[in-house]
Image (tube, rainbow, N blue to C red):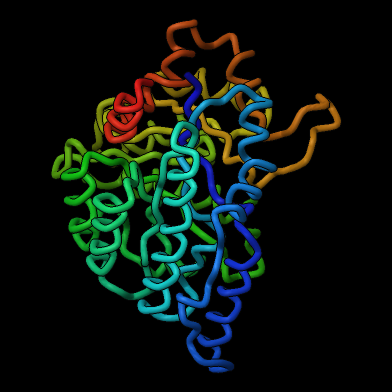
Length: 342
C-alpha cells in the first residue's frame, strides 16, 4: 500500500475562497462577519474537485491513501483574531472530513488548528478534540509561527505548547509542523517561508529537551526537513556544542521527515542521511509545485517515482517508507485502515 501522509485540499470549490474573502473583508472593517451557514458546498461540488484532481493523480501515480488536511497557505492564522481563526478552522476541517466521508477508502482527514498570534496555544485544544473525536482526524497541522513570518510565538519546546502536546499524546496522533502564508512580501510562502520554518522547527527541537517530558510525542517535519538533511553535519556539530546527545538519540525517536522533495538527487540525499525508519512517503500533491519537469517529462511532485528509483533503500525499507512507517507513526491511521480491512 502507498500512503501519502501530506495532502491539502488546494482544489476546494471556489465557494470556500469566496466566503473567506468576505471574512477577510470583515477583519479589515469593510463588511459584517459572514455567517458560516451561508457557505453552501454540495457533495457533488466536492466529488468534482477531488475526482478531477487529487484522485485522478493518485490513480495515475499509484498511491492508495492520502492524509488530507485544509490548504496550508489558507490557514493564514495572522489574519483577524482568535474568533476568526476558530470559525475558519471549523469550516475547513468540516470540509476535509466530508472528503474522507465521500471517499473513505482513499482519504483520511487531517485538521488545522485555530491558532492566532499572541493567543495561548490552549485555545486550540477544543478544536483539536472535536477534530479527533467527531471528525476522525488522524493528525493535525501545528503552525510554529501563527504570526505569518514575524516569529512572535514561543519555541516549540516552550511549556506554553504543552496542553496541545498532552492531547496529541492522549489521542496517539502526530503533528505535522507546518506554517502558513507569509505576511512579509520578502518571503515567498512556499519557496522560502515553508523551508525556513522546517529548518527552524528542527533547530528549536535540537536546542531543547522536549521529548524528555513527552517521550511518546511525534512530529513530522515536511518538505524533506528543509535544510536539515543537507546540513546534517552542522546540526550534529551544534548538538555536540550544546551538550546534547547524537541526533539519533536526541530527536529521531520522535521526529520524522516526509518525501516532499521534488528531484531525484534530493530524495537520494534524504535517504542517505536520514534513517529509513524516519522517512514517510508524501507528495503534497496538488501543492507548491504543479508543473511538469521538462527534463524528465513528469510532474515535479510525482515523488513516488523518486522513492522507487533511489538505490539507497532496500526493498524492505522502501515498503516502510511507503506504508509501514506511516502506520507506526499514525496509530489512528493504522486503526482506521485496519477497520476497513486494509
